[in-house]
Length: 408
Image (tube, rainbow, N blue to C red; front, side, top):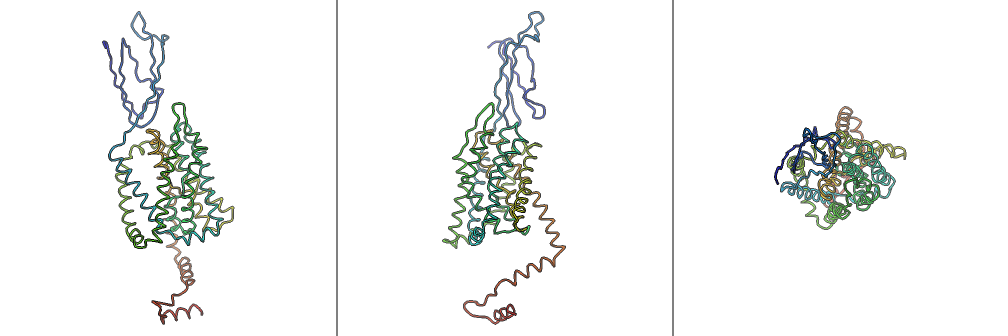
């Protein structure tokens, strides 16, 4: 090709816009345009071809011949480090869920299910209020970004997270209710999460350039990663006590090591996602859980639940397992759509625990400043427990004295 011109035009994330005019050239034959993107995304490369003026060889203002539009995609190929982090995430998730099953007290779950009003309220908040809330926030905040809107909505359809049990305990909530709600919502996610994606989620799966097929098989597989280890852990608890003891013994160090790896290597590997955080994404990441806390608490209060259960239902409603949405989007949808959509669950996971952490600190200080009130509560709980009268089949004098004191 004679008279070939080659132009290299880097795209700056701060200055480039899909409607910007990149350059204007006088061409006689062929041009090769090379573009390099900094951030993930999709756009259109629009080229206007105009007729040259025969007199002064400049571009005529009114001589447009045609306008060409080419889809432009900035993608990121998975590296070996990404694959390693993916394997670590799955192993860590499976082990933590297995340990939760080993530690789960089914008697506590049974007692909570016998009075299912609070569990029903919590389940309704998680799978009716939160998906609708996620839908509304996605429409209001990210209607111009279908992938991000999908991520916000999918985060609202996730089951309760295990961290909710910790905060329910720290804030003097009903721990047995919290554990039951986490278990029930995780099992129900197997059917309810795909149902929401198949119904309202369809609105976020289509734009003018593409239509994403819902990967129901991948969603189902990801949810099984939560359900199967949980049921396996429950089986180990009753059938293999030695293995249960070993798992519970190593769960703390494994958790510490896993968190360190995910906070270091995991963040480094997925740093491109955090670079995509913008005010809209951060706002959506805050609105979804924070409104969830408030709405869940208000509904429980209106339905005349005790204060301890109001706190628990509020925590369980707002604190969802956004990691499920993150994994589904990141590894189920084709790039860069899955990576773009995973930005919203990542933002939600970062923002969700912040108010609960602040409340835990304030509540801890309050308890320290009012020790007598909480000491009396603990003493009443200890006194309500029946004394152990036998040690290895023998009645002890100390046990007899405790029995007499309790009778008095």
